[in-house]
Image 1 (cartoon, rainbow over the protein chains, first blue to last red):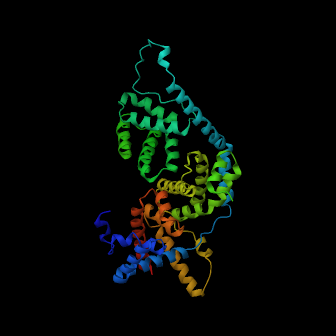
Image 2 (image 1 turned 180 degrees about the horizontal axis):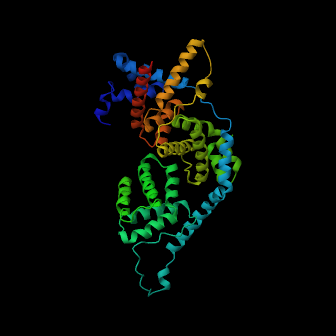
Image 3 (image 1 turned 30 degrees about the horizontal axis):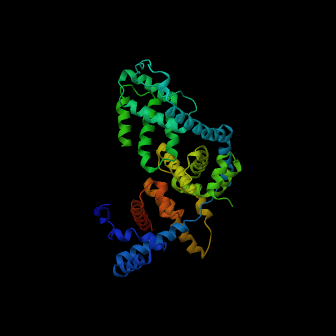
Amino acid sequence: MTPDDWADSGIGHWVIERIDEYLDGELPSEERLEFERCMAEDPAVAAEVLEAKRFRALAAEAGPLPIPDELGERIRERVAAGRSTGGGRILLLRRVLTVAVAAAVIFLVASPLHMFDPDPAPEPVRPMVVRLGNPGTPSPRSTAERLEDWLDQAKNLNPADADLSLREARELGLLAEVRSRLADAPGSDRNYLQAAEDLLIQVENGISPEALPMEAQMVAMARN
Amino acid sequence: MLDDNELVERSLKGDARAFNGLVDRYQEPVYRVVRRFLGNREDALEASQETFARAYQKLDTFDTSRKFSTWLFTVAGNLARDVLRRKKRRPEVLATETLSSLPGEGRPEQEAMRQEEAERLRAAVETLSEEKRMAVVLRYFEGLPLADVSAITGTEVSTLKVRLFRARKELMQKLEQGS
């Protein structure tokens, strides 16, 4: 915060930061005494505290909202619908898959595969667009990684390769992935994910291959 | 009574009743938050259902070192913001159901004035920016601690305090203009 941020308040930063805690009785005793000294010496601070107190009372009086009778039933129905269409099974399956993938990675890293083939064939030339995996029901983590990979590739593509990349985004269901991640993303990630969502909506609607790298670049900027 | 994390663990093992226990515990606070944020009953009902459906689907990504309620409110808040963003419209003015449902205490004229002021406050909250509105709803209407509101909104506590201060000033100004 810069001093300018407080300029319009008429009272100091120190006071603003402590009004709520003072009213909650959460200030340590020394700070509470200091705060009360400020209130006694400065009528603006005292008025501010009074206003905060009045606001809290108003908010409390704004009253309990009526809860619709059908709320619980509708929530349970929605959750059960997700369960019966595989949500519950997927939950368990994800845990099993996570363990299986971890075991596979450990095995691959630990195995001295090169010893079995001292003269391996040369690596084939990788195509410009790397297939990022088969669509289907991968674990959330692998889908998330493929989203990052796709975005990284998309911003560096030449237009000739963009068609394949666009098809890939649709096949992998990246828009659904982004929306799913948006649901519980912390505030710091939301700009980036919303930019990614906007781009993937354009992909679904048929963005031109020429425009893709530039748009993906914009998403990368939102991430940084 | 089982705590939240125990219910989460049981849900992850496939115990549907355990997740229903979490629904019972949090359906009303979640509804109140999205209702005050979105400003209308139907959107709030839909967002509440979707919150629990998403939470169930993503339960295995929940970090049990965090508070379940904080995580759930994060899901609810993000969904509510997405509803607003997709609709690209201001929320409707609160339905009159809230007016008639307030508890009646005190003399009739005092009660009427109190209801009027409370109604003006609710309407004023809906004019706040999304960030301020969410902070005000969680902190002052739902009474969550600053640390929880900070975690839910992904905002530093010091920034949050300023946001709440500014929101409060804005709201009080609107109330004074209207009276």
